[in-house]
Length: 288
Image 1 (cartoon, rainbow, N blue to C red):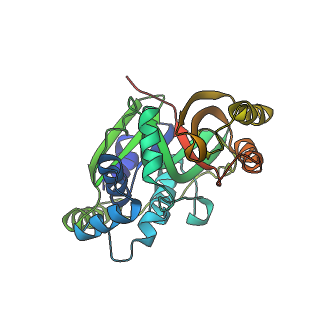
Image 2: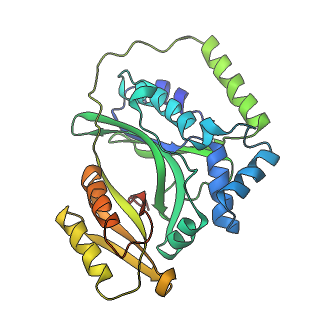
């Protein structure tokens, strides 16, 4: 695990952090990297990770996002000086992702990561873990294999990114030893928090939307109309296949998650939609 805790406690102690986000689980990053690199299914990539020692025999906490959520609760507490419990961190895992999602993402210029984030939103705090697509210019987009990386953003420093190995026996042992050493060096315990920020439960995000549809006139227009009713506009769209194999994938500009999901549920009821729509968040920032 990268040394972000020590950086937050010491180097950035006087900085007002605006956002901490990153790849905080090396197991899931390895699985997603292999799915993107080889076209492997989730199950095959997981089996490969287990064979190499990057995933445990029971990988549930890793692939469900729970391990990353626990780490983000700790990072949020340190970065924002406010108590955050695991129960307050909504999380989604990678078990439902398919090789199709990564193939279509490549067509849209995106890469897929499991992202943990903690950020200030209108005086509140949003902490969450979920799969997210990134554009190539994002500093986390180039972090591949069993590696972790965390980006810290503040007006005082703009942004810094720290990366390092995040899965495997020796890497885990090294991280645990580092934690033990840190605990022995004063201050040996995390100081009490001095404020309590309200947890935000509905924030804005861009989204990728994957639809299996009947190939007939007016399909895109009806989908766009429903999205527009909820305040969503389409940034990019790709159609593949014909007839019963038609697929429609798009990226919509940021809007409140509740409004996007309302639109998704309405789209799912349309008679030309042949399977439940799949939605994945998109992080639009690119750093140059």
